[in-house]
Length: 218
Ligand code: AMP
Image 1 (cartoon, rainbow, N blue to C red):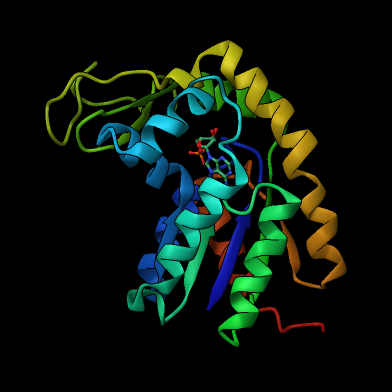
Image 2 (image 1 turned 180 degrees about the vertical axis):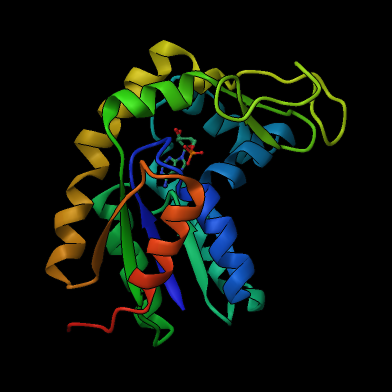
């Protein structure tokens, strides 16, 4: 199964991708996670990406396309994959299509997660992350049982620089301008299913499983 999870930041694509990846034994490819890892490891790519990410802007297409192409070459993705946070621009979607065609592969479905802007701002601004094991919490909806430290590893939790109010605004604007056109792009290819992401994690997952069973219409 080859899937793309589309949606604004904070709609819960990553959480759902983790659940589907475990259930269907396929790999999740999150460009956000890959880029954050590169930043932590201070690689050349990480140094290039860092500033764009901090401001909530997109990392240049050439950088992320190279990253994803490398991952898709990895034999561990032969069973399928979920792309979480990629593509985010039309040129990225066109490059992905070329990479897949060259391998005689196709996407099975693109899921568009929808959540209101107000809810997204609430989710992102309250998010806290563990800088060591990458676990995520929410000050209101999913607080750490051990206060401001990570339940899993004891590290002090931090707010991601791109979850600060100014960066959230930029990310939402960038989403509207550069990523939202992909809805039309994939609709035309008869690949798109819309999903209400504002429900509980479990309800969204149940609806997602149903959507994944929908047969192809074209
Ligand atoms: P995410 O965790 O998916 O919200 O990604 C965090 C940040 O990584 C984004 O705000 C961008 O700066 C960068 N990023 C992730 N995926 C992409 C992508 N496909 N294209 C460009 N930049 C990306």
